Amino acid sequence: MNIDDYKELKKGGMMRQKEAGRFSVRLHIVGGDLSAEQLRAICDAAEKFGRGTVHLTARQGVEIPNVPTESLAAVKEFLGTTGVGVGVCGPTVRTVTACQGCRVCPSGVIDAPELALAVDREFYGQPVPHKFKVGISGCANNCLKAEENDIGIKGWIEPRWGGKACTFCGICAAVCPSKAIEVSPDQAVVSVSLAGCIGCGDCIESCPTRAMGEGNRGYRLYAGGKFGRVPLLGRKILRILCSPEEVMAAVRSVIEFYRAEGRSRERFGDTLMRTGFPALDSRITERIAESS
Amino acid sequence: MTFVKVKMGLAKIPPAGKLNVLLAEDALKNVISSLKQEGHRVSGVSRQESAFLIVVEKEGERP
Image (cartoon, rainbow over the protein chains, first blue to last red):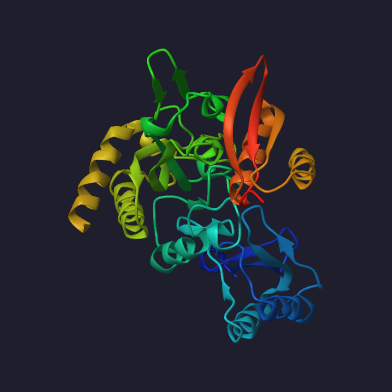
């Protein structure tokens, strides 16, 4: 097998191991969701083609290690019958990670798995200058670490203070984890710094009189995060987006931007360091406006 | 645990009765949101140094 053959296999999720003639087969999984039938098929494949073990990756993926070169086509075919595809590697859009979202988790604000499927359907395996990761957290608890991804998405609740019912008790300010609320009983005002707000909604949940209500509920996007050798935390971009359609338009335009501006083997965060974030923001804002 | 204690207090009073609860800041969110979910009302709040004294009105009509 020559180097080009290995490159092709790697693109298709077959990762060459240190041990000659063996590959770790990466599977296509979205948001860590697998049916029991798929899990059984993966176990069967690991026993039939590997050495009876699977590896759970850092981003909700599954790999079957120790598959010999001559079984690569067979393992792909075997798993394909249960709807488990083989993954991708190289300069492509990778596994979309997600929490269980608002249909399962009491803290969930958005339907993270549904959004992950939509992002996966449109972008998984698509070519980009370097690896590109999308992670979706259903709420501000951020279990899926949105800021570590090239695009991170978080469920977000922005509070709005309605003065009438307020007794200026100070509970909203006391529970705010980012200290973004200031209560001034003398002036009969409660001010919320939206720049400091982390979108958790604790102030709304705790308000005894419901004077603190929901302003916007939706999706907060982060761009340019990565881990690896030189980690970068993604930065907040755009306003709060209100629908999955707006999010998809934003992701589409982020990827277009990366394809246009990114250099080969340059992570998106490094591209943004060169271009600056305002260039990205204005490009996406135009695109969302066109799509709505 | 704090909410369990509050519930035990509420179990001892009649519907629409009032219960004073002294809460540390870190218990505020869980206790108040749970009370609201179960239909009780927080009818008074006052600051007591580093804690909050809240008045909880038990759900239901006065017997």
